[in-house]
Structures are given as C-alpha cells and as structure tokens.
Image (cartoon, rainbow, N blue to C red):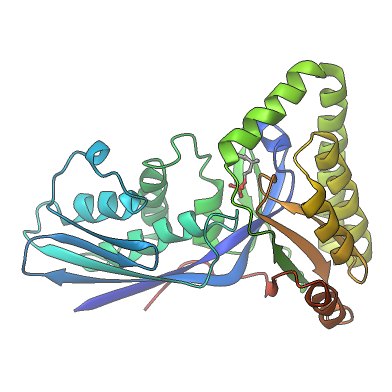
Length: 313
Ligand code: PMV
C-alpha cells in the first residue's frame, strides 16, 4: 500500500526580519507543491529518494549521525515506524525551487509527516503539523514553525512571536510573479547582519519596526477590501524598509525595478541577500509583468494563493 500527500510552498508577503523583533508578519501558501509518496518495505531499511539525492539507512540511528539534507525525512520515518516492524521508502517530488525562501523544506516536512503517518493511522492536521515542526527543527533549530503552519493549512496567515499564528479569512484573488535571483542565501547569516544593523542603529531600527507594524496593520484592512492598488503601495514601502536594513543588493534591486514596471509593487520575499522577489499583479497586468522579466532574461513564474494546504490522497 502506498500513501501520498502534498503540501504547498509559501512566500512571506510582509514583515520578514522585523518579525524576528516582534512585529507581525503576513505569509501565504502558494500553488507550487511538494508531493511525497511513502510505502512500507520488507527490507527493514529507511530509504529516501529525492531530486537532491538519496539516502538509505537502518532505523534507530542517532539523528546527529545523519549528515544529509534529507535528515528531516529520516527523522520522521524513523519516529513513525517505531513499533511497526517494517522498513519504509519515501519518494519526494518537488515543483518548488529549493533553498530560495519559498518554503520547500517546510512543505517537505509537512507532506512527508502526512504521507508516512497515514500508512499506519488516520492522523489529524494538528498532529501532522507538530511532527513536521519537530522534523524541521533537525535542520533549523530555531524555526518559529510559521512556515510549516501555513504549508499545512494554506491561505494567508498572520504571525507574531507573542501571539503565534492566525489563518486569515481573506481570500484575495491576486497573482504573484516570483522571480528567482538564483543566488542561494543563508537565512541565518542575513538575520545576523540585520542584528548588526540594529545594534548600531537602535533608535532608527525601533522607528522602522513601528512603521512596519503600522504598515502590516493597514494591509490587514486592505486585504479585507481586496484593494490591490493600495496593497501594492505597501509592498513598495516594505521594500524601502528592507533596503534600509541592508538585505538588498544590486541584482535584487534591478529585479525589483523590472518587477515594478507593470505590477502594483514588488519586493524581496524572505531573508534577502539572494533568493526571490515577488511582484503583485492581477489579471490586468500579469502577462505584462512576466514579459518584463522575460525581456531581461530573469527567471520567473506566477503563482496564486493556495487555499487548500496539506492534501492527502
Ligand atoms: O528566507 P526565509 O523564507 O526562510 O525567511 C526568513 C524570514 C526571516 O524573517 C528573515 C527570519 C525568520 O526567522 O523569521
């Protein structure tokens, strides 16, 4: 018997970096997915196949001994097959670009927690989310859990450190054109560089956090009204704040300029330094925005918000 599950990637719409210092962020799931297929095997081994490599190992290895980016899959398979006396094969297929802030690792954790656990039991979304966050912690110890949460439930989510997550009722119909700089970024080192900026510019940083909080609050209202033109202005303002804290660079700025020509606004999404930007569009300017990127030979693709979240089949 095989069990399959898929989970969407995500983008941070507003509030990256400032969220580390307590400001609310807004994330959304996107309609690019990871699909995981799990199957019991009689060889007693844990075997993982993915487009970034394969891993075969025996159960009950200490997790610190698994020196592979596939460690979260091993963690989940090993945990879930305890007491079931079986081997397991996990196959991962992805249409989310890896390592550029689009939630590929969270989507992997969510989809594999669901696919593997459902080989044995019906498992609730809440329990799958808990397992997924545990698995993600084997590679990002300090994960807030925000990415796994939005990948599990789909839609738009507000998040802050004090109050946690809240999936919003708004179902806006916009398209995002995501452009990939193809520069891999380390979230950890960009977060460290922002801390350095903050430590050197305490009062300026506090003012920026206040401005970002106000901006995010305004966006909640605009989302309810589906006011894409005004949301686009907030996207541009948010990008200015990200420029101020030093997470942009010439390549990203050029991409944002290109994205802003025809869209309502464009900004970095995620840690910055590399990774992706998005341009906010609707049907009226989607194709033109894509063409702007294509003319400059910038890799891009369009997504919509995914309201489904985790899917099992
Ligand atoms: O690059 P991503 O998508 O992993 O985003 C990082 C978001 C930050 O706000 C920069 C860091 C964090 O832990 O929230």
